[in-house]
Image 1 (cartoon, helix red, strand yellow):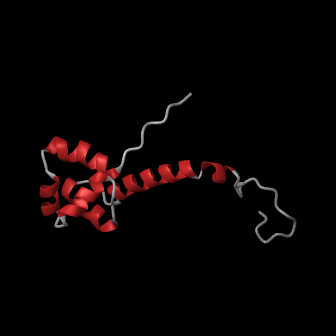
Image 2 (cartoon, one colour):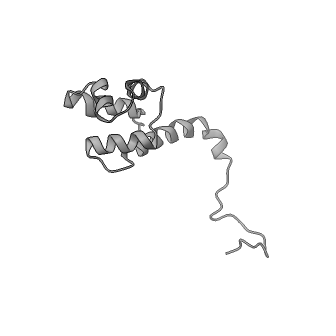
Image 3 (cartoon, helix red, strand yellow):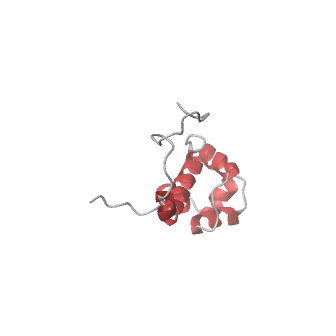
Length: 108
């Protein structure tokens, strides 16, 4: 059986893989990217999601590709929500391979 890795928030990634190794404080990062310190604190504490605005600033500062932080956020959100919707999603029949009625405008 395959074990799932624990979910990592964008804030955990930010502090553990970027700020700590580089010796940068939350306050210093906020000043460098011109955002309120509370925004960075909220992201790290998991109380705030990464916005497009913050993504572009973080990407510029750390030299990552635009959208990097948004993808981290989206992956976390998708995994979290996917788990809570697991039973409901299992009842949805994918369109691909579904039997279609003759004469249906979407018949391939």
